[in-house]
Length: 210
Image 1 (cartoon, rainbow, N blue to C red):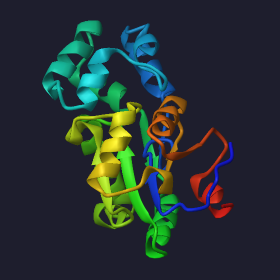
Image 2 (cartoon, rainbow, N blue to C red):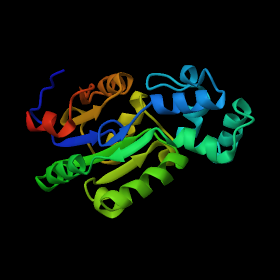
Image 3 (cartoon, rainbow, N blue to C red):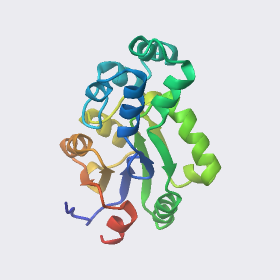
């Protein structure tokens, strides 16, 4: 996928799959081992059960979410369920974040926009802190937006429009990078320039080619 790089002043980055390695198949395998055989039908990169959307917009409590998961694996312990849910999170890619920081230092306005939830935030921010330092990570961005904190999520075009309005960004001067096609499509509908980071592509190498 190519993108017209002329006139880009702002870049909004996705988090998981772009700057932080994740594996959607690991929770599917982990919940299958606990007896939740069809977890892959309700939680995928492309689609998910409404309760996950509610969790990612802060509209359902962590405890209610654990109760939902436990209802499908009643014989599992809390630790087993927590591990199965959190094992999607693998590791930060610090070199990608440092590249983003270098872009910011060159004058680009850089932002992070992630569909996530309070449970995962606690886990991956601890991993980030241990890897490169959470404060150092956040200095790569003008603003960091987690969907569970702002109450809106991708792929809704209004989410991208809102982020642009909050920061006085012109959509036509703003590039959005994500590894999920539906999110890229939503940003494009909102008038942003987009790049779909498909498997095998690395965000720093893609941006270096502009």
